[in-house]
Length: 303
Length: 268
Image 1: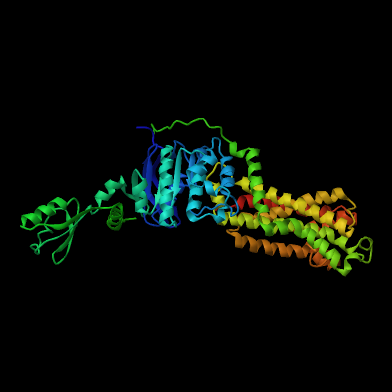
Image 2: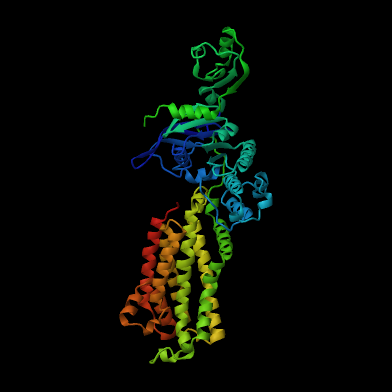
């Protein structure tokens, strides 16, 4: 295994009495896209700001590309691209001017013209920042984070405030960046975004990592399946509830909905065992969204 | 944490600190300045427009500036010219420079810069250079316009005027830099800047010529950054006096304000 690109251990950051990050540890390998997911105020942004060297942690260690963001700040700036929330550009600077200017800051910059094409801004190159749409501003923001040819990029709340169309366009952009081999730490509160883009996801709540895994693994940890069917006659009372793994049964006459981890086969067997056939059978796999709700909603919350 | 050293590709460090990068930022900021019609009007043309308009429209313009020498030897509009130069300095120092920095802070422009290798102080330096450039052009326009259109008499001691101009620009930009260093947003920058500007214009004699104001106001004025600028410029322009006190006052303002601004500067 190659050395990790980002290594965080025991990170803690407080603002006065408020604990923003309690205890966060994470490792991101080269070329990975890792999503940090969590509700507003969970400590996601503070975590990435500590990783980016914009804030000084109260405790814990942070290494990015083997560098300490506090002490090797100048060296890190050359190799880390940071896209932050609520960072605009001067209103009247054009897309091309902004990228050309930012390219001069770096020793080995990317070609601004190529970035403009890659991020779908070619027809906006001479447009002033104030006249860009929300999605175009975000894509420029991503381009500015990449213009230094970084080995690792941190993208914070990339698509917040964008309409669904612009959000999907931006996701397409990230998928193309991945092909450049850039390691990406992606902060989001959209499950769909993490599901689509991330190789691995960290769920952060109240300043702690509460779950970690691939989007599929996390989804499976939640109420993994929902089984819906109807029967010709009502089932015997308690039949479905006693199946191992079943978390909830709701029914309306002869229509049933069963939720639980990997319960579909057992439910079908139980129904046929009772001499009935499940009709209009539908099985839905759990989503990351459900995992999120179940883990964050019921997870340990001691702070 | 022992076996995790990542290979570091050799990258030349310090590119962002080169003069070439400062030049690029300054050119970019200059271009953005010229795209703001209000900044262009007030920063570049207002001093000349004010001087020429007063000279052409005011009945007192061609009258002697005062009853006794040296004021009786020059026209009122010549006496007003150093005041207009002080106004030009105040205009860039208090009305265009701090609001730009306030906007950059409010909009996260500075914050984004802090994620790049560029030392964010370069943005401050570029802004100072752009505003000083505008000030030089604005002052030249005013002096040339005054001379050509109104026949304003040129300074008695041009070198003193030049020295005073440089020191006065430094002192007032330093005060503007303190405002720029701490204001959280454009609104606060404009508010603080305008308050300083209007007060300064009073002490510089823009509203009412200083030589005609009470002695106590003239004394207070001598210790304000723009009042000292106005009096020192007048000393070199038509009084034939070396403005030692005023230069010392302005140097003191600069020496106090620059480190204070640097110390208090906020990037977010």
